[in-house]
Each structure stands twice: as structure tokens, then as C-alpha cells.
Image: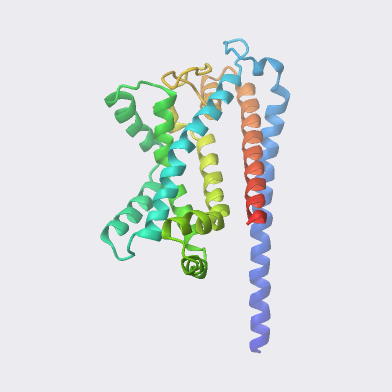
Amino acid sequence: MHKRKMKFSELVLRAATWGSAILTVCVLLYLMGFILVGGIPHIKPQLFSLTYSSENVSMMPALISTVIITLMSLVIAVPLGVSAAIWLVEYAKRENKLTSVVSLMAETLAGIPSIVYGLFGLLFFVTFLGWGFSVLAGAFTLSIMILPLILRSSEEAIRSVPITWREGSFGLGAGRLRTVLRVVLPAAAPGISAGVILAIGRIVGETAALIYTSGTVAQIPFSPAQSARTLSVHMYALSSEGFHTGEAYATAVILMIVVIFINTVSAMITRRIGIQK
């Protein structure tokens, strides 16, 4: 009787797992199909012009601005997040009050809505520091927004490295810093890369925080002090105006392709790192 109950519960759990997986795939395929059907007919060469106008509503300036803002945000957030994770795991005492405060603040920041980050960036970077609506203000705002994500994922990846690896490095005469750089970080690189991938996805799809900081000017920024719009902001602007709904769907198609490309390349890099390790 007990074995029958175990088999029945296993069947129920297996059916629930498969049902959840199939439902998730179906929802994803429906969303992708909805975007592709609505956007592909409106993809035209004029959408890739280097200059934006009300006639061509080109997305190329927004695409270039997306790449620039993403790279700037990662350059700011990744070193800070990984360094903070190294300090929390390797140097700080676990029962230290400062460690508890940093962990609590990271978890709190991760749950704040993006529009709150946008209002903070508007008040601090745009107004108080006098940067105005600029790529620099948007990049700093996004770096603060993704910092908790990179910190937590890097912390978990570093903690997952076996303690015996550290002890072996210490036994061979290596110091703590050398052990962290030569042993711990290479082993934790796939987990850190996964956090960076998630951060890139959040940057590329962010709208609310950038409207208040980087602005909505459709131009290629040749200086960090210039205003620009990303693909998500460009899509929002077109759909809210109501005159270029088809082009907004086309922008969504390109945005989806960009996200898939970034995730694929990042996964290949992570896999290569794991093989080399």
C-alpha cells in the first residue's frame, strides 16, 4: 500500500512538472509568435537608417544607444558587484554587523521597482549633479539597479567553490588574494556570467528608469552627455503615439532577436569557460 502511494505521488509530481514545463513553453511560443506575426511585415530598410525622422521612424539610433548604455552600465556595475561579493565571502566575518547590513541592503534594492530607480536618477544624477537627460545618467541609474543582481549571483557562485580548493591553494603557499584571483574566480566564472546575462536582459528591456534619466531623443549619442533612447524606450514612444504601431511591433522583433543573440553568445562564453576550467 505504501509503495502504491509513493508511485501515485511520483506520478502526480511528474505530471505537474511536465504540465508546468509544457505550459511555460506554450506561453513563450505564443508571445514570440504574436510579436513575429505583428512585427515582421513592418520590417523595412528605412527602419535601419542612421538618422531618425518622423517619416522613417528608424530604430538604428536606438539600437546603437542600447549597446552603448548596456556596456557602460556593465563597466560600472560588474567590478563593483564582483568585488563586493568577494569581500562578503572571502574577507568579511560572517557574524559581522556590516556584512548583515550589506546583504540586507542588496536584497532590499533587488525588490525596488524600476520606476523608483528612475525617479532617484532624475533627482540625483539629472538634477542634483546637473548631468541632465544623458546617456551617463541612464547608465549610472541602471548600474545601481543591476548591482544587487550581480552581487547576489556572484556571491552564490563564489560560495559554491569547494573549501578544499582554497585549502589546497593555501597549502601550496599562495596568499588569499592569489587564491581568490587564480582559484576561486575562475571556478565561479560560470555563475558570475549567469548573473551578468540576467543583468543584460534587465538593461535591454528597461523603460521606466531610462525615460527619467537618459531621455527619449532619437539620435546616436556621440558623447555621454547627450540624450538618447534605447530600443525599449523607442518601442514605448512609438506605441504611445499611436501613429506607428506596426513599427513598434517591428522594434519588438529586433529587440527579441538582440536578447536571444546576447543570451546565446553569453551561454557559449560560459560553456567555453567551464570547458577550459
